[in-house]
Image (cartoon, rainbow, N blue to C red):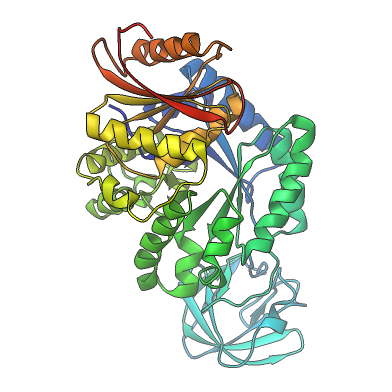
Length: 478
């Protein structure tokens, strides 16, 4: 069956063999995430090459997303690897401490004391430990433990409500961008952006680093800082998409606020013609179990019903026992949720204006296919823009985007309800349209007598040139 919602999965120790990765691709993996928080440049390069090889074996393109580490603010290391914090006891975070003990620990972000004042609340280890800041003296942050527990090496630190000044792009991120471009990454996910400037800087660096390889990656903003919420529209405007990064975001704004924010972010992204990925703990129990919990099934299904382009796996596929089964389960949940999704196409088109010819053709194709009961929409596209605009609206009519450009094909692998396919387009329009229908039929997406809506640009081969809509029945002469 045609699945509209895409699956992003992180590869790591559990999934870094060709056999497992090929099974994951055949199970429904659309985009591979390389987590630059772990591993070396050579590790990422080898995995990228393996992705391309396995995708060729599977007979389709699979995109690569380079996910930057960003300014992850962490405690340092302990003499004994960890300590236990007791409620009501004092504990010091010291930027100048080299090796921690039961009384204090160092910081990898040396400017943290400048960002804090008495009364601030610090959340460590994904919010499992809570510290109240009592005073700040030079390099030392004096706190009282509110919620205790074991604190081990390199655990993360967040300030409740956000407000830390660490820049979105670190020196490591800048080097990782160069690495990502050298291995041909299609997407770059930027961690902890606060505003449009962070995303514009990342895009500029990526475009410069990608120029020798002919690459301009799509830029994804990971929304995980409290400060990003009021700046969400400007971040969207400066990005190609966003990721609802529910882990760090929940620590900063509180768990209870995240579900409503998720719905709001998905809606805003779609209204802005941008991509949106929903991430973090979607199938967490499948790290160790062969089936998901009922709550996880509902979580994935609700993200689909909200209209997310993609759902993402992290540790489940990188380090879990069941990476292939997890993708199979996620794909099945997406399919089932999509069956019940209501189309509101006519309502979507009210009060909308289209100033571009290619966007008007895209919307006309959607409207026509929906009301005529077409079997498929087939878009011949160079850049993929026509397919992106179509994918912002749900019609239950699958969209097939045919392009001669591998880069466009991989970029469209994240577009909801779009199946990207390769087609060496002819300069003759009718020949190209006939080839497009033959490709869709050969892959089993349509058969003789089915109605298909086609979009194409004349003259052929110009990005942004879609200007023609054609309605045909499979088997008729074009």
